[in-house]
Length: 149
Image 1: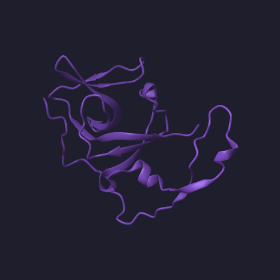
Image 2: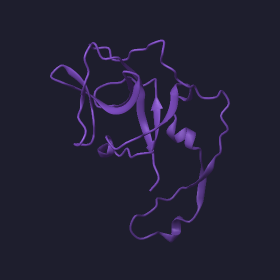
Image 3: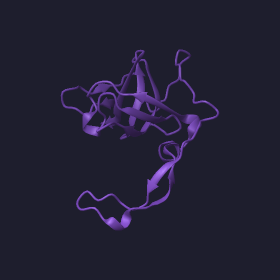
Image 4: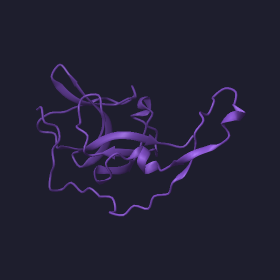
């Protein structure tokens, strides 16, 4: 099973609106020191649109909310917003959103000794071996994670 990207008629994906309202926000050009602050960096150089930072291909991008803690080791926490790009090839090592037997999950795609699997990033959760009879659809590759502190 070399081709993992499977589409079915039952897959429902919500596409982004054609016209997205962009709100440029101020970007402080100086770096933010994690130690002692530098008073010379107190100016705004330009603005930053988060769409430009987080979304490379708007027509292929959607957002999903993470549930649970199986991917905590990858920095994905419960209730985080995941930025997902459907145009990126799902290759081993990438974190993917997929539907398994009709239920969505986020896991790291892996291949070990010729066997494909969806790997959890928390030792309390088992990996999921991918077999021919498993109904699976990869919806996209996670490119960014947004979470509060």
